[in-house]
Image (cartoon, rainbow, N blue to C red; front, side, top):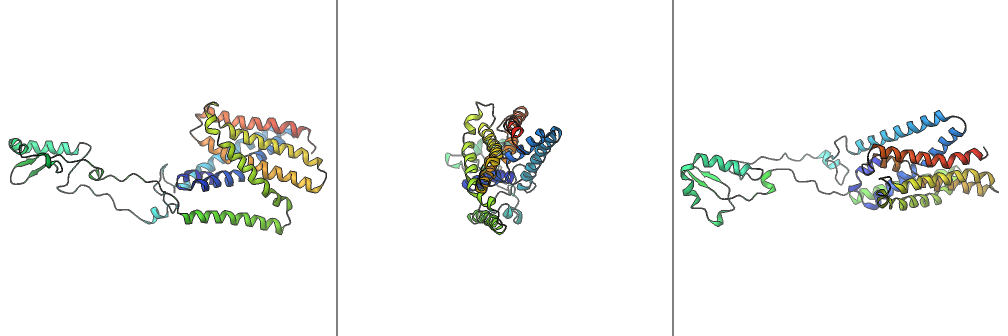
Length: 330
């Protein structure tokens, strides 16, 4: 849900803030490697049906949550809601703009054939005096509209210059940005969450959790760096985000290797470090939120390409996990 909300308001956010929230926070919270590790474990232990149900259920729940987040971020409106402002829609919800007024009496009617129709109606009424009125028009009369002067029966054939104000249409929405104060509030909230996590780990003497912190940014930054090359590789790969696929596969490989190496650790420190690499580095290197976001994107292609991308992600993960778990000690 969160990655869908961020994606919908990405144009209103600072580029660094949106990248940090989408790639850093959401990408690290959702780990593809752990999901595939559990699925591969079901297959190896003789429960393939449960593994298939797990994959299908996770895909359906993730797609529904993404759609719900997209709907919530739009305040329940259409694809282009009018609640994009620097206060996340509060200004649009609390204030009502005046309804656009129509053209008043005597005003010029321009654009979309309005002036032409009015001129034709006026000319039909005063056809006898049209030659007389046209002879009075000079080059300096171009700023006036075509009007019939009451009581004189004369027609002013001056041309009205068309403008957007004469159409009485709403202005096109401008690009808005979140208020810097609101952006700083988001940053402070994220730092508070990290501080709370550290406090909980210290209070419970959870050393492995503290050791996850140095490895997590490395995995997230590597995944973000790889994603920069997706656009250049999509044309050659039929629209498939190759480097997101590579990041998820590498995360699964690191997770599988850690499952083997942890049983050969010579000390508790080594075992905790290997577990931290699995949870911190591999967990942040692989991502489910980006996978779902790309499956929902129109940049990949049609349904066949999206299905191929998803099946490739699952197939490569199983190809990495299944042989390792089959020979690894329980």
